[in-house]
Every structure is written in C-alpha cells, then in structure tokens.
Length: 220
Ligand code: DC
Image 1 (cartoon, rainbow, N blue to C red):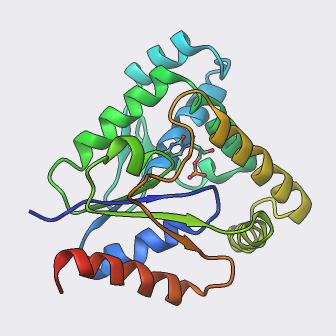
Image 2 (image 1 turned 180 degrees about the vertical axis):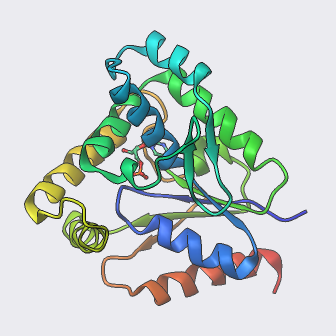
C-alpha cells in the first residue's frame, strides 16, 4: 500500500508547492487541508454566521457538501471556490474557525477518510501531530515571516489578489500567533518530523530534500 506523507508548518512556508511537486513525481494526491478550513470560513462568511459560534458552524459543516477534487479544486455545494478562498479575509477567517474544537474534529475525520487508502501528501498544521500520527514521513517546514510574506506577495500578484507587503506580513505574524497559541491542536512540530528551514532555499532544493526523505522510507 502506498504511504501517506505529512507536511506541516506556518502559513506561506511553501507547503503547498512542496506537496504538489513530489505528489506529481510519486503519482500521489496532494490534499491541502488548509483549503478545507478556508471553505468553512468562506461558507460561514457567506451565510453571515459568526466565526466563533461553534454550534452554528458545526451545523453548517453538517449541511455543506465539500468536495476536495484530486486535482486540487475545492468545490462547495457545486460552486468552484478554489480562487475565492485565497483572499486575505478568508485566510484570517480560516484561522478563526480552526480554533473551534468541533470544527477541527469534523475536518480531521474527513481528512482521515480521504487518505485512508494511502498515496496522499497532506499539508496543514496538525497533520504530523493529529491527522497522520503514524505517517512514515513527516516534514516540518519553516521560513522567516519576511521570506514568507515576500512569497505570498508574488503569488498574489500572479493571481491578481491583494499584494501589499506590509499587510501580508502583519497578517502572517498574526496568523502564526493564532495558529501556534490556540487551545486545540496548535501548530507544533511533531517529535519525529524533520524540520526544513526554507528561507534561503529554492523550490528545487526543498523538493529535492523532501524527495530524499521520502525515498529513504520507500527504500529507493
Ligand atoms: O494552510 P492555510 O494557510 O491555507 O490554512 C488556513 C488556516 O487554517 C490556517 O490559519 C490554520 C488553519 N489550519 C489548521 O488549523 N489546520 C490545518 N491542518 C490546516 C490549516
């Protein structure tokens, strides 16, 4: 059976890119778990549900039909929201709803079901510590807030989204704090995860490093 691979780290550390390329090489599927919390925030904002109303958010989750397409598209109740969930407002909202224990439980259950057959690379905040505690490869990616803000500016410019460096940097620092200090499953490096600081590394270097770790486990 193919293995599952866990990638965790703060926002904009390059987790998605580093999950995408090895997934392509291995013929694995990349599941972006952050996009699931983003979809919850998107739906709550659309339905004007307060992001800290746990009961209302949970009932909303029970009713929403969320499809995480194998090619990375996020479909909510038949609507492709892949681009819409990248807006700054949704990033902050996702960080808010991800504090709610019952929201986390619902997302973790979905994620574990999706990757039950193996062959997945999951990226998120609690993959190595909660979702895939037994994953044979766990990577914890970090980079300075400044390096991450610069990357996000570039990405946003390419997508035609808000790309003000200072706003993005402040949001990243605020989200880091929220994600690392929340009560339930805060972002933390799993004891058995390998840390890669990507601040001064190119994408190719990070992908090579990730592939090296995977190949060690696969025995290739
Ligand atoms: O990876 P991202 O920036 O798209 O994630 C959006 C938010 O969702 C982030 O602020 C923290 C939260 N999140 C989480 O709590 N657990 C995950 N496994 C993935 C994301």
